[in-house]
Length: 160
Picture 1 (cartoon, rainbow, N blue to C red):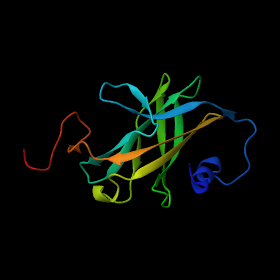
Picture 2 (cartoon, rainbow, N blue to C red; picture 1 turned 90 degrees about the horizontal axis):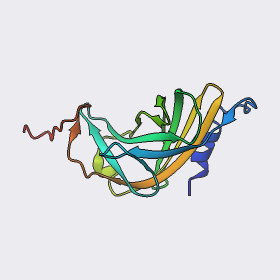
Picture 3 (spheres, helix red, strand yellow; picture 1 turned 45 degrees about the horizontal axis):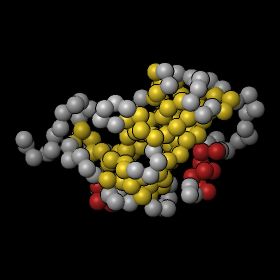
Picture 4 (cartoon, helix red, strand yellow; picture 1 turned 135 degrees about the vertical axis):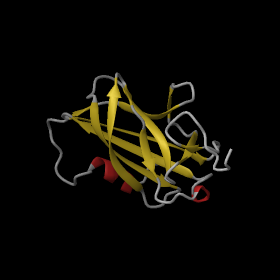
């Protein structure tokens, strides 16, 4: 179950009164698999990704269930094993019903701190008088030994 702190962060990102002109949309939180298909986030594995600059992150994406804007602001929160939530904000762009990747950056690049632990994720999208909130959970894993450079290549850091 998502913690009340996590839900408060997403329900009240500005802390002010709600705008009655905002349309609430439906969306689903997930990941893009190796065949470029959207997979809803429902308790499976969440791959920890080590970027070439040393940042550790989890890749997510959103799918709209209906109409929505092409550009949104995503406010996200990730809670590991009930610890204090980690959060961030970034732009999310849509082509059709799929967003580009929404990267959830972790504050420490030590994979061992996170691997094997459970994570709860919530993402709120806001744009052009429209909003939606989606949640999901999974287990953080390190199945991919690559250091990702943003290309389709793999650097293991071993000089290969």
